[in-house]
Image (cartoon, rainbow, N blue to C red):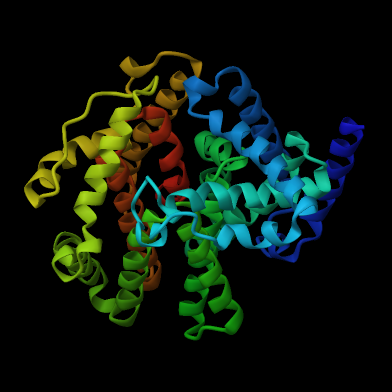
Length: 406
């Protein structure tokens, strides 16, 4: 019965991807859409399989934990519907809502898992609690993210369909991490909802109610699933908007904005003690170092001072952009990650050598600045706090399409 259910839903959603207007407006053909969808399903199945047999090595034990918890949540829907509807919004701790960056007794720390479990519990209504059938629903839902970015990128880079097809959909780590039953697919969807609607609102020089709603929805997804990213994302949007308003000095606008953001990052605690951003990063680093994962590597201790962050920046760049090194390889999964990293770095250097510039339009250049500043900010923030290479590869996957599109 489970196999028939899986096959039936697979056929249904393979047909739906060819009939969804948002997908069709991308310019991709029906066979291309179906192939992308099936690749996501296969990646999700492989993700689940690895989670069973190599979960501890690959930082993927959570995927099955989320699944089992979602079944309990699904059962709660029938046992206590009221509790099912309200428990996501209840703070079980005293003052847990005020601990935005906290990891203990923090509503926000629990929300990222609770929200994802709630999403899976909704899938369970239609899959009867089958993990692999849920992958089909998740593949379809998360596919809106890369399709949205692809539509933006084809507008920025007209005539580069095949390069963008590879850069947006087929980067192995991106396909893998955003297709499996984990938070990355929805986080990237949140990024994409904001970027897509913000980009075309600026292009139209007006924002519609629908665009505003989807921008808000995207920001809420980011807030719920990885709240620290909202601190990085909103400044990038503000810099993008100001650069669009004063486009003749776009790069200078980004530089000035980010200088102001850095100053605010270190001084906000004097305005409100709860806004001690450096200490939040230091605390997060201590927590990751204490985990002692299989792919953890030594890292310099970070202090909540400007000088310490400066001294640790080379290490942050190395961890989040350059690693895993070949010497970090311990099994086939880390070999795949190291190989991809080396290939992408090689392609980047080729780009630097051969790129002659193509007289990009001013607004396109502004969007490129946004992608670079946002992506590098995310990567460096990961490098400051995380010393587990498996987690780093997963966390950074969501910015790869923004960095690697030509």
